[in-house]
Length: 153
Image 1 (tube, rainbow, N blue to C red):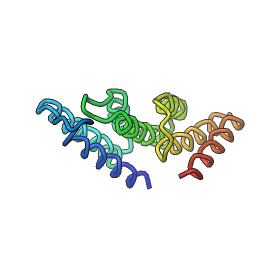
Image 2 (image 1 turned 180 degrees about the horizontal axis):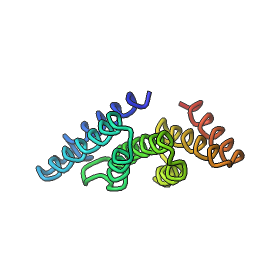
Image 3 (image 1 turned 180 degrees about the vertical axis):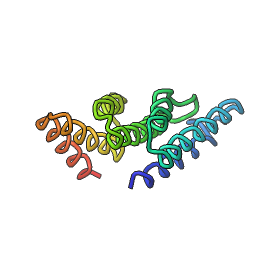
Image 4 (image 1 turned 90 degrees about the vertical axis):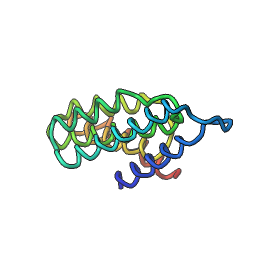
C-alpha cells in the first residue's frame, strides 16, 4: 500500500514540473533541481527496498530532512517527505532501532499537518514504536488518531 502512495506522490510532483500557479513556466534550473530531487526520492526508497539496513535508513532520513527544491508545491513536498519518514521509521523498527523510529515519526508529524494517507501512516508507525517502548497510552492515542484520519478519507 505504501508503494502505491509513493507512486501517487511522485506523479503529483512530476506534474508540478510543467507549471507554477499563474501559468508561469518553471525556469530550466528549477526543472533540473526538481528532476534531481525526484530521482533522489525514488533512489532512497529503492535502496531501502533492496537493502534493509542502517545505510538505507540513513539515505531515507537524509532525503527526508533535505527538503524539496523551489518549484515543488508545498503540499506535494510535505507529502513526499512524510512518505520518506514513514518508510524510514518502518525500516528503523524492522532493524531494531525503536527509539530512532519514534524520533523519525515525530519529525514527520512535525511537518505541516496535511491530513491524508501519509500522516495516518506516520501515526500508525508511531503507535508501533511507542508500544515497543512501553508507552501503551501513547500508542493507543496514535492508533485512534490514525483510524479517525483514515475514516475521513
